[in-house]
Image (cartoon, rainbow, N blue to C red):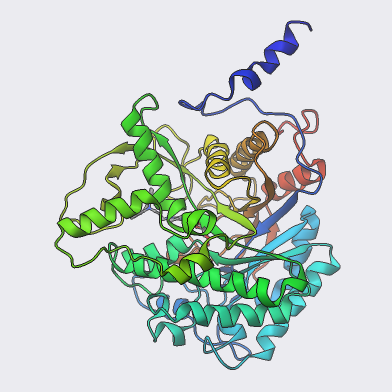
Length: 500
Ligand code: GOI
């Protein structure tokens, strides 16, 4: 005993070894904070269906899925999981797991069919009913205002490329605060603006399918950040009495230096995180500006490319002040990691990826999933949480998405349990051993759903959904039971089950 206790304290004295990583670490048997918010997440277009019911307007996704080649299996979200009609059943699935919170998104086109202007009462009622059902089951709503389904009417005016989009979004946000703010205390303005711009306006792999990987992406990013900040300021100016919190959800992979002893690899990994998380977080959580490394690299490359001005816009001084500090918490969607090393790109290559001057492959040794980009890297979640806490100060953090895909949709989903078991234990270490302020966690996803360009081929659900039946029956997978038990114990208890 006398030698045992000091040995346990060694990591606290010398700190966690951040150089290199252990793929599968020993579990920490401990508990999460008592008020920890356990949840599942979904998004409107991926689960609701009812794409043209009850006065809903047309979104960019309603159109994008109809262009042949855009969705790998030729499917749409017209019906999806039919949650528009089956929301009460969905809430029962959540209650069965003992969820404390549910993160869902509002379809902008159900509230304002044309994006701005006239309200649609039937759409508003749907969300009021869903929220009432959640509350009746002691589940707190956490609402995303925008999960990629822009009203087509606004896209017709340029969408996220039009500077006015920040005002349009503020108008929509105000309607939601007014209609739902008495019941909703956790607001997420935008989901993954990185993907809205990279895939929507860069690679064209998502709606609205525009191509401008080194140009349009930076115009859209600037307007996305402005839109978030305008909505945040509107809330605190006119809805502060509702006493809720407003934040944004950003996606980032952990960037592990390929060689952790090589200074240039460490620097490239840092650059990669600044281009991913920092692109959107730096202005909001630090100083109203894009990260220095983005400013330097993109300004210099733009000049060498003979362009009259930098491809990376500057925020106006007025906007800078509005953006800086526009947050009550930080939402992070975390799934996977990359190994990063420096690689100078061709100056002719006008691209967000070339702008970074690095390569970011994934290790062949890491377990895979049903998605090409998703490798199992539990160590990454603890590292990115520590990175964010160090970079942005002691901000409240929510993991607003984390999850694992397969292509079988099998009920005995042991691989998914392995993923959650080790990622959640790494999150526990970040909280208990490193002191990071993680307040909640949302598993992606409550059920298998419309996985965007991958259609229904990649399944992330803790519940299976029978997509060939008109009733879209849900079946709990083993992972939903594992998660329910973790929530009930609020931590890892060695004796409860072999899976702990
Ligand atoms: C969330 O995004 C989202 O919020 C949910 O709605 C969604 O359902 C859920 O996650 C699950 O996906 C060209 C290896 C360039 C590395 C081609 C392989 C980049 C990187 C193809 C394959 C893949 C989750 C796109 C966050 C974007 C998908 C971030 C997950 C990037 C590529 C790749 C490529 C690859 N990511 N997204 N990527």
